[in-house]
Amino acid sequence: MLPGSIQMSGETLSSAEVKGVCEGLAEGTVRLLSLRGCHLSDRDFARLCQGLSESPSLVQLNLNLGVVSGTVRVQQLAQGLHRNRSLQSLFLHGNPLTDTGLSLLNPALAGHPALVSLDLGDCLLGDEGISLICGLLPPDGAKPGLRELTLSANPGISCIGWARLAIAVAHSSQVRTLNLDYNPLGDHIASMLAVCVASSRTLEVLDLEGTGLGNQSAQILLDMVQNYPTPLKSLVLSENNISLELQQQIADLLSEGEDEDESEGHGQDKPVREKGLKNNLGPGTHRVLLTSGLADGLLADGLLAETEM
Image (tube, rainbow, N blue to C red):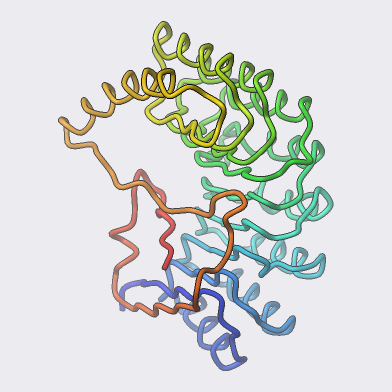
């Protein structure tokens, strides 16, 4: 049987269901596992992490919205990641990790040979967490370095922390997508990010939605897009105090590059992800159990695009 996917949202999982998931992981029949906002016992979470450690096929794991709810679960997840060699994308959006939890996870993240996409949005991170994340960005020969990083809604990170991240992204990182939406960045930090974008040879998507930007930073970003060739294709500036005229000018300049890519057949659907401050489960619970090769069709540039119900 080809590896497929298991996707659940907002459900309470029984021990029998967790056992079935773990069997699929160990047998290599699961490529995508999403338990977004699901509830399971501590014992079953430990079993799930053991299944992660044994899986030869799992490429994407979504534990968003409180699934990793405490220090013990963070440690168990770290143990599972230490032995896993297949995972490429890990989503932990909306879990109360804090810098302490991330420090427990960091050795497993840093040593993982395949991890290229990481979502740590709304995880109560601060400057110590940013320092750890910066160490995950450059490739070191044994690991590829992160290509997609989400840090939405982590207001505890200071100006110094964001400056460290900007330097790390600009210097030898492989980051293609950087999501910083719903952080109180302001014009000063946005100016630093403009220098980061101008220096990066890989960054294609930058999400600055709802980050407290004004026309000053928008003008700097416009000058950067106009005068310095970069790989940037998408710059999200909605929900900021920026004039529509400036937003349109930036969008028009970036769309010229997008049109060229689409004419060459490189256009792709954008993955759906958790957005800062919008991490509710919606009106109901959802479940999708698939045992076909669906996950193969979700691959884009070596990454599985996150799918939500």
